[in-house]
Length: 229
Image 1 (cartoon, rainbow, N blue to C red):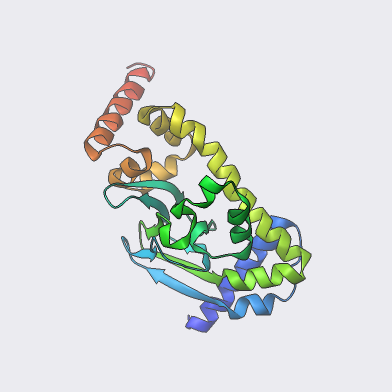
Image 2: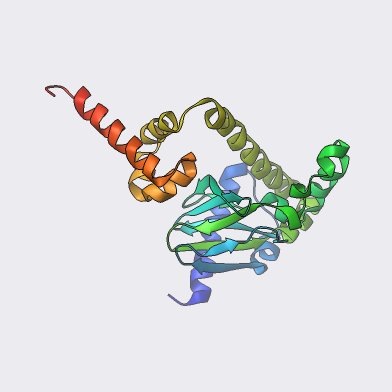
């Protein structure tokens, strides 16, 4: 399929997803579409580097990305983003709305360099060969200034990110890596089968050796609990 045809086909699909997501028709779609392109990255390739201004958002067509945070010594996977999900690094966008919030928060938070693009510790990395639709967030902001539907989309995507973070915080801080592994097995068995133990270890915050021990222990316990075992 020619590249232009692929992009047009993907835009039709993305529009359907977004309009279903907010229950509204998105006007001036052509303006949004002009700022999009399909991008393919290989496994391990960095799509969005940390410590950079990167005013783009992504809709995953195929493959999987990880949102990673690192201090230069160790890295931790914060989220896994698969097909038909949206990904971006909020602190790197340089969005006017984000800047307004950052300017109004209390001084000690406003001074935190991690709130600025040059200090953002987040990056987006491909776990497997991945194709994404890339869109410019400056265009989305401009459309949101003129159209209520685009404003709803922007606020809904932001709210979705907040909800996911809020849901993940208790599990991250109040449960053990083994409990989190059991939870992922129950909720997303497809994910456990799909990604490597190395990626799973980074997501759960353990070493590869520790992850291997957890996997063996849980498998043995499940096998022992089966009828007739």
